[in-house]
Length: 27
Image 1 (cartoon, one colour):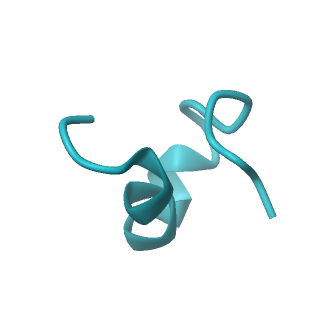
Image 2 (image 1 turned 180 degrees about the vertical axis):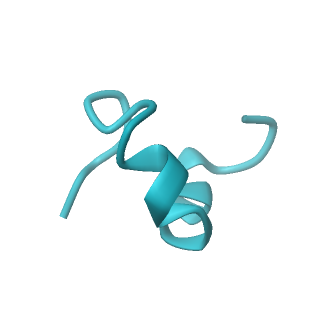
């Protein structure tokens, strides 16, 4: 994650859902 993790969360919600949901702010 080189850019904003929050943006990556929305862009790659499928991956982020199983990767760093705790680090990121899960909706």
